[in-house]
Image 1 (cartoon, rainbow over the protein chains, first blue to last red):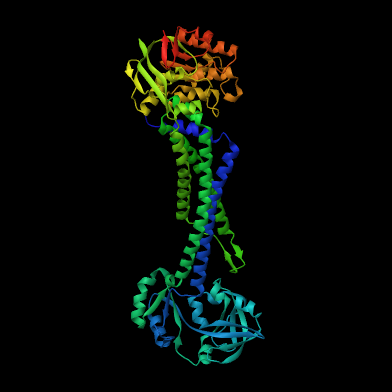
Image 2: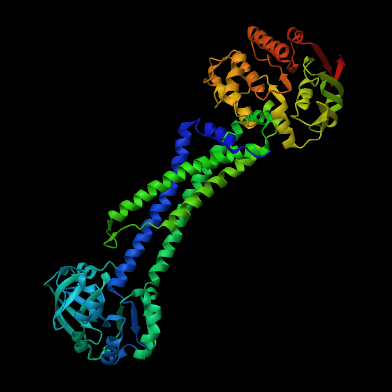
Length: 391
Length: 222
């Protein structure tokens, strides 16, 4: 005789709603576990997306040409720039020099990265020079002006208009005026970078027509894989990385975070599911006689199993649905109202991802159902005579 | 027509390492429309016989026939279906579903049996047992006698061929006991309901058509 699901649902519903306090507490634990997974993962997604955007906007191009292995600089920048300008899909490019130095303000000193660039070309390629929080950007012709990253400025107690002494890696020491303070949201960049015009770096480092990297902006950033071999051939360079490769470390970092948060969220979800299982199990123990009577009046083992599994399903449907709804609302709220993270000094917003939403819904529901399997099996195996006589 | 027939019915249990013979070769039959009482001292096998006749348990050996069909070795699902459609049970401790109302308790077996008019029928049955005004009460809101009447209404839900009652008055006061037995008599006379009832009380047993006296797992006389 097939199980009458309507009849099983009728009894499960009556049984589950009998003790409203327990029902509310157990459902609440599933609601919170489900919403927690959605919110935490939504925040991580938002944070990672912001980090990638900040990095792509300020630190890397869609394609980035690096020197060959064992070389520090790309040489012959002039001819390479001419060839880049001739390529149709290349919208802009910006050569940069990377060097190291020590910036000092009175008795305070910090090792830092010197990023030298052509402000005009950089503006066309990245938004780095728009990331000023105070002051103005450097010009191509500035000889005594630098921009200082926000953390570095804090560490050295520098502000716009202050003078600081920069010791280059070749031993040359020069005093510069801080023209602006930059904050990109990229923790590494913001902690210890100074920006100066590339011509000034050429002068102090005694080099010319060279670059540590050339950032290239394409008309469409999804064309990077297609355009990489074209640029390699046209410019006779071998070492080109796409923006995805450049931000791979962020993805790896994100995946590590996701793994950790998944473990924490999973523990919460399993704890909620176990509480469902325990409540149903206790119900089964208390209801042995009633289960015996149910069998005596003509229900079979499959029906009893279905009744108690359905109780877990009811907890799951209600808890997961409300958890989904609250999680969705929270994500939408944080999408519209980013919050400020004092550690990274950036605004963090959430990002709703429908794929994650569906996965969380299915996993939460399945885990809750699974929690009901053992008590349901236990219930279905109750022996009629022993149950009725309580032996 | 014989509605229940048993042949050399035996049932033994293991109590630790000791074998206890609860039934030791019972040969009997009950005619359709009969009201039979089973009496005897504690431990003589009355309830064991009722459990076997009601297909709640399986015999160690022997045969059980219901309406001429050998039901001895039916599988558990077929037995469950048989119990649902052909047998009604009334227990000593009422054993209602506490989370269901009076009407829902009576409706439930009909829902299981996929009857469509279960609401009307459950009202009819509750009127029959005198509880038409208690449809939406919970069992905990009723007296013992009233709860037993709900159990009787539930046992009649699917028009069973056989009503088996195991000490139905064992937990009731005298007044309620008489009401229940009068209800049984009414069902037996007006609806020709076959009833097999286990009781300790000679007064209550005396109201049946026939008494089966059990002693040491066998029927003493008929």
